[in-house]
Length: 269
Image (cartoon, rainbow, N blue to C red; front, side, top):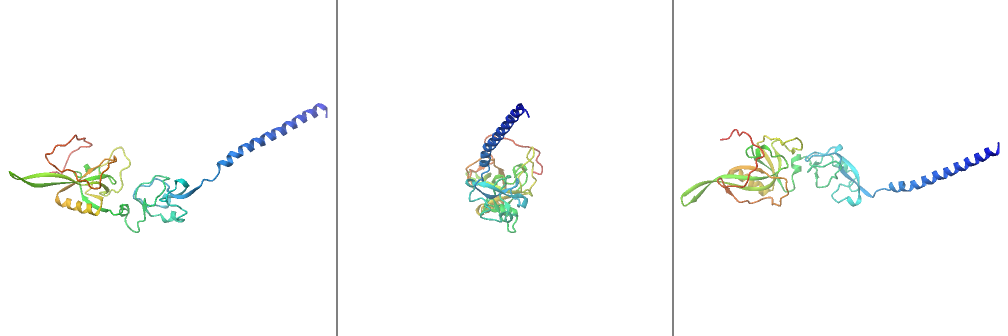
């Protein structure tokens, strides 16, 4: 082997050794951030909704999942696996008192074990009763009231008023109950959540969520005159469960009126 070949081999060996050290050095620098990125997150496993779940649904096994939440985000209302190891099985069959979105934690007060009761009974807030009111298209906002809407209950009656000229009959309209939740309208127990326009519901009965005292008021109102339901908007209002509004007569003038829907009225007198 000539001297030139020996020199070429020596240079190649030095270059190979240098490349090896360079590659090993780069691998060592990249390993540090990778190791830091896989540090375990401190948290707790909690029950969450595995999919979007409507209000009033009985939870199926496929509706419930377990997810790790950061410790600072976990509250006492969460269903924690550390406190209830078999919670995922125990909550199967529980009824949701409100709607859930996928991944949302299931909280203790948002579901209830029906224990043989119907799902409507499970949806009632503590201390409230489900009370039925006779309605039709004319007395239920044209049939556009849906479950979970809020309504005012209006009593319209004819009363005899005596003045200097003698007895005079007047028609009075009073809001006897305000900001009442509708549990069901006819056979519908779920609100309308899709479609390009609201659909009308042909119903003869509306089921309202009332306190025991308000339930008595509703029953008395049905005996005293005609009861109608006025649909409330979704805007936030600071009102009590019962408002004692000013009463009016048939000839009383009001403010501006917006027409949301109109059509032919049939079956009236």
